[in-house]
Length: 338
Ligand code: PEP
Ligand code: MN
Image 1 (cartoon, rainbow, N blue to C red):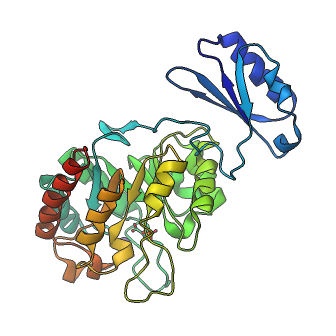
Image 2: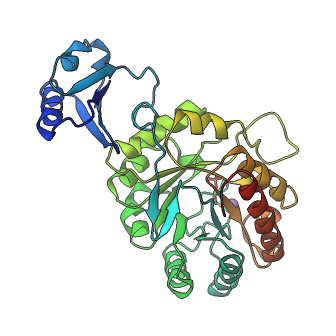
């Protein structure tokens, strides 16, 4: 249930709404918007509560029900875009943000060479997996803590924020102490214990869409993080399973306008995991920006042939540099910058 307060309502009036909700064993989340406060009343039984429970209170403008399964991620709760900063990089604003780097951190040499190049080409956040969720237990699983240390080294040396994946709820504190953004991977989109843990952390989170998840399920998963009070949530479309087998996953480009309409959260697109092949990545990346994505997550390796993970889809630094120029032109054409 959404309680919209009147413009200029007092703190006391907001408190009264909150107290009424709490006395009914409901959870409450406040959105202190620029000109008015919105109170989300959350709980399994809100459907049975008459709207008058809150409509009669002083300072209340209107009370409505959110009929969608996701609440806090919805535009009903927050009509305006979520814009926040990750160590000086504005996310969700006019400027499109490019996160780039290797699939996995493999060695100091590999990471530093790649980061140097992607930063020079204009990436504003670097990526690299230290814990890799691999389909087979016999494949390279990542350098784990050593990988985090190398990411921190790159972060300091090149003065650039880092995004890396966390796969185990028990590792959240450790990963959060090394990185600026925690990634929840596609295979963990509905790992509710992990979502709750990253929600409790105050580190920004990049939540990838599950391989076979609907947009509704994805946004409802985001609610798990938001419900813990972590408001810095970014979404990432990375392709879904379909019958098509000429590519790794089918990038649901339509989800870009769909999610932007339904949710206030910043939306990224990962053209690399959808394509599975470096030669398709630029076209898909260009399409994502044209469709309205707030940023991209792109895999780049200084020498893809030597990559331990996802080499076939990695761009070389020079391919990445060329793509950045093309993206700049597309951003400009739609009134944004890169
Ligand atoms: C990744 O970004 O390295 C990754 C494993 O992606 P996904 O979870 O989308 O498969
Ligand atoms: Mn990868």
